[in-house]
Image (cartoon, rainbow, N blue to C red):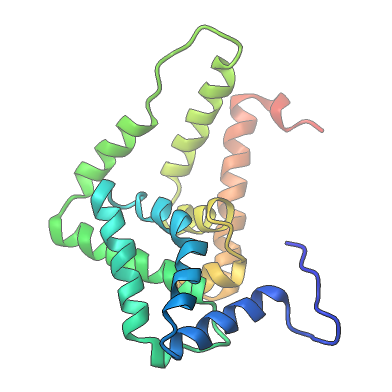
Length: 197
C-alpha cells in the first residue's frame, strides 16, 4: 500500500491515526470510539459473517467494541487497533461457534450463500470462475484462508493480519504465499489462458 509521509515525520498517516484513536479511547472519548467504529465496522461485520450469520455477526462486532472499550487502559498506541478489533471479533466468533457446536450448520450456510442461479449470458463464465475461486478458497487450510481474507478482502497489512491472527508477520507471509500458490495452481488447471500475460 502506498502511504504518503507527513513532512518532518517518520510516522505514516495510518500510524498517526491509530495513535489518535488509541489515545482518544484511552481518554474515554466517545467521539473517538465512534470514529474508529465507523471506520472499521462494515468490514468487521463482513469478517464476522464468515463465522456466524445475521444478528449473531452484529452482536459479535458490538461485543468486540465493548471489550475494546472495557480494556481501553491497556491499549498500546504502537499496536494496531484495527488488528485488535479483528482478533477480538475472530475470538468471539470462534467461541460462539464452539459454544453452539454449529460448525456443520455454518458449512451448510456457506454452501447455500455461494450457490447462484445459472444464467445463459456472457457473465456465466465469469460467475462460474468466481464460484470456483470461492470454493478453492474455502478448501484452503483454515489459517491460509483466514490470512488471505484478512489481507485481500479486509485490506489489512501483513503486520495487522499477524496481530489479528496472533502470529508472526513471517508466518502470515508464509500462509499467504502458500494460499496464492494453491489458487494459481487451481486457476492454471481450470483454464491456463487466465494466467497468461
